[in-house]
Length: 81
Image 1 (cartoon, helix red, strand yellow):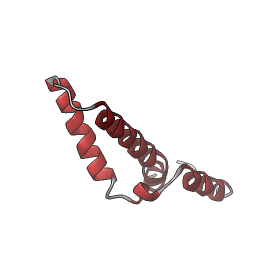
Image 2 (image 1 turned 120 degrees about the vertical axis):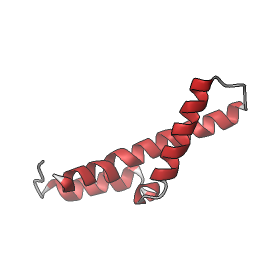
Image 3 (image 1 turned 135 degrees about the vertical axis):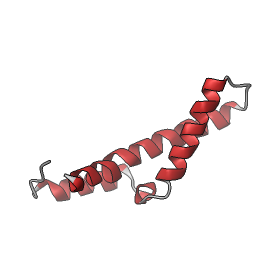
Image 4 (image 1 turned 180 degrees about the horizontal axis):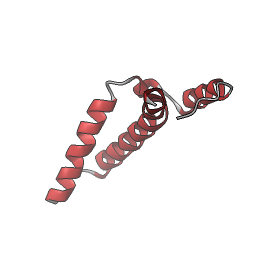
């Protein structure tokens, strides 16, 4: 159970979340700074904290190709929950 959760988080979910938040951060930077609502400021804080946490994990260095290669390599091991 713990192994499958680890695989899901670190090899599948975290890299996608990291890429999504990095892209959103770049888009916002390109648009410039506008006055933001408190809800938007809260979202910015959540994005910042999430990126800060995930950037300390190995997923920061993973690419879609790395994840794909990992899944292909693990396919023959018949892992289950």
